[in-house]
Length: 118
Image 1 (cartoon, rainbow, N blue to C red):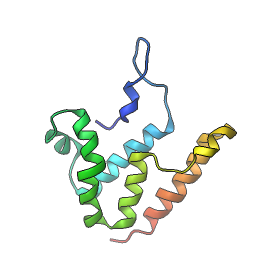
Image 2 (image 1 turned 90 degrees about the horizontal axis):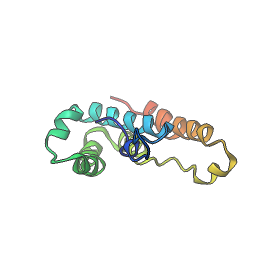
Image 3 (image 1 turned 60 degrees about the vertical axis):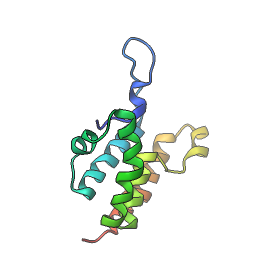
Image 4 (image 1 turned 90 degrees about the vertical axis):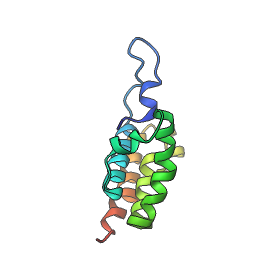
């Protein structure tokens, strides 16, 4: 349930895609979604007919509920994790994608979440 949708799109005997840090960030987004909605992923998944519907509802319906409950800053941090919105496209050519992803994650998720107040 917590795995990134692309994890199982690979080819070969295992059918797994090689590890990418974005997979962990996606999982973090799901955990933050659970915290924000105060509802576990399995309960959200239970209302869906399949994994495809679940993945769609996570990015739309469930995230929409999150904004009104947790505010814009928290909602945007979760959205970035779930849709991999870290503005590092042009950095891929440098060969240091992981470093740029870490810096962007720190800036757009960690630092933003520090600004949230309960």
